[in-house]
Length: 82
Image (cartoon, rainbow, N blue to C red; front, side, top):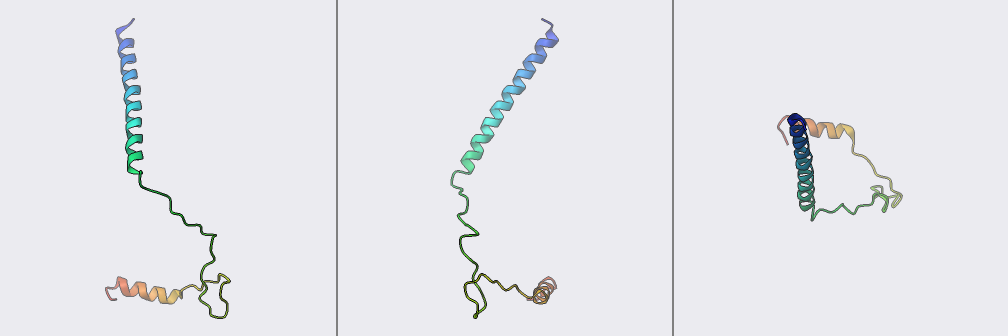
């Protein structure tokens, strides 16, 4: 067998072996890092949003904040004032 071919096959097998070892080690570390992490148990369709209107309770109508008021607050905060 040609020494160049043998050297190439040895390097190729070492690269594949190191890739497998690296992947399994990374999987193990990631699994340990996520041991206590759980997905939040929120179901967006389980309950209707709270209504802010007194005359229309429970129908899921949510009033949005006035855009001009939000812009004034943002400008006040960015200019350094509270």
